[in-house]
Length: 122
Image 1 (cartoon, rainbow, N blue to C red):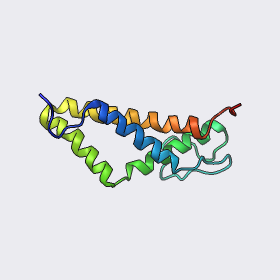
Image 2 (tube, one colour):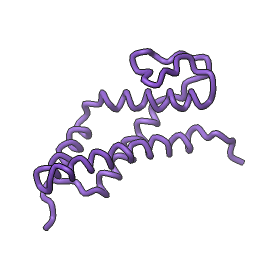
Image 3 (cartoon, rainbow, N blue to C red):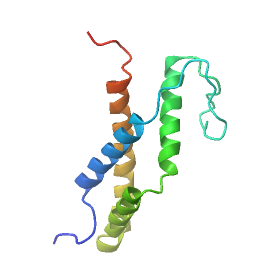
């Protein structure tokens, strides 16, 4: 039986990846020597001292931006995932959010590889 309002796992993965890629495209990679704001520095990076610190800080900034996202896209996503709870069961809705979050990170990291490669392309 097809679901009326719920998003499929495939749709959730696609949306998560696209949201991650798009959010990453708006954030510049922090520079070495820059200090990350204490409000969002949940890893305790402080002052960026290495390329790895810069990448971690960049992901933190993007995830903080996404956490504060109140867009209509986010509302549609929440409706679609939460509809899984109503139409299937609570665990399916939780799986939907987990899939979204892991796809979001895949999109962010894919953009980093494309936009900020660790090695120069030949």
